[in-house]
Length: 89
Image (cartoon, rainbow, N blue to C red; front, side):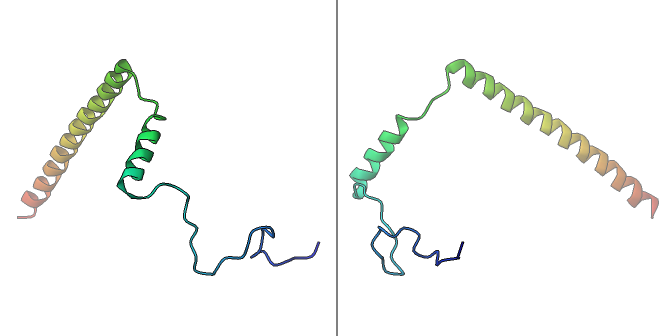
């Protein structure tokens, strides 16, 4: 199998200029943008109220745990640093 030039992978497509960027076919302007946003928002699967409450609880518990962890680390490092600095006087 001989190696061929891979720059023209699709022989049926007309050649484009080197600097050309393909522009998707869609509506332009604010009206087109917001109509596309509305169309995409209809595709979103929103969580149920119970799932939202459960996940909010998980986030709050993780945040509280991290606060406790960082407070404990802060207290521990403060104690270590104060022992080191008082001992060197």
